[in-house]
Image 1: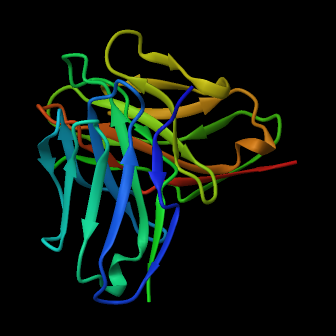
Image 2: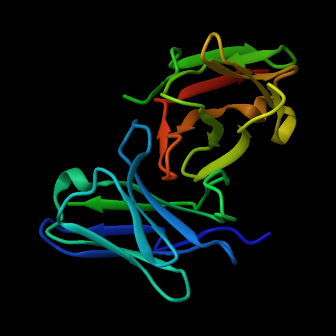
Length: 115
Length: 114
């Protein structure tokens, strides 16, 4: 079965640079979520989109922005990168089916290292 | 505030023995509860969920979990552990309002010894 695809899998950037992470949800899934997992930490919710509209926002820095496109893929844009942004960034997708009960399926993650 | 607690950082069990990974939650309203497993350098893999209905939920790879409302717990169990079950396990709760945000516990590392 098709899974959530994230690219790139690994990314190395310098401080103050910009990074763009991409997420391709499972086909027919209409909701996308972004999470950040720091070293040894649990995943923290950043932001989510339902039908291309932002549906919820968590602890996402103002330096970060995201959007969901007409084909339901999503991009997380990160500017003015800081050392503390080094983490594993997960995208998850789900199908709402009219109820907020469906399972979030996670991608393999993008490991961002800021030097 | 909504929260999930996994009181054990690590659980050690011998192969073939039963295993339990503990999870308790604190939310207002009826929780939606999930277990995910994370292998090294891999994403989070869904194991099972409780939304409503039977308190005993069966999931992937022989895992099951029991929802206990009075104890606000959702412990993950398996009758016979395998070495390949060694991984990091996360309990998560969905805040029961009109969003889908998952709140995760801090994770429990399961080590199964041959």
